[in-house]
Image (cartoon, rainbow, N blue to C red; front, side):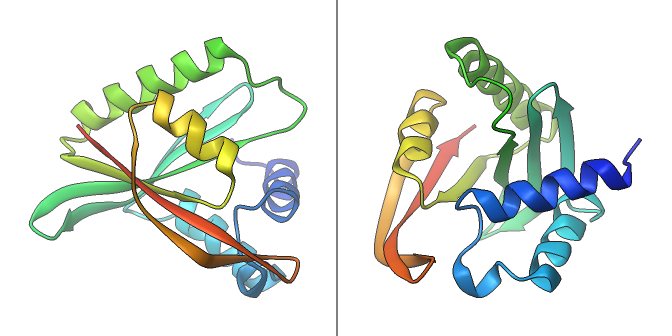
Length: 147
């Protein structure tokens, strides 16, 4: 079940790591994001021991069935090679089950972009100043994966 403790942990993580740009990292916007991720009819959240793999905004876009990947991984669970393999398997299987043609993802973390490449994502574009993290403009990577 979804407890207040889990929601508090998600709120903390969304503030701690660059999931959300400065303008969106407010209590109200974080709560809106949680609703979008976990309580929307166009989202599917899969919980595992270290966090959540979430497919959101599932539906037709540009004539193709797509979803946006949002992966929340908590810092107290080591992110290992096995975790990457697990993520790739979950993403590939969910893509088939959801009948997706493409999965998209955005990140401001270069390490996440490198990890996403191991999951089969390709960088489609980089907005050099697309993300603001504590007042500093950093690149925003736009990635996608054909399913």
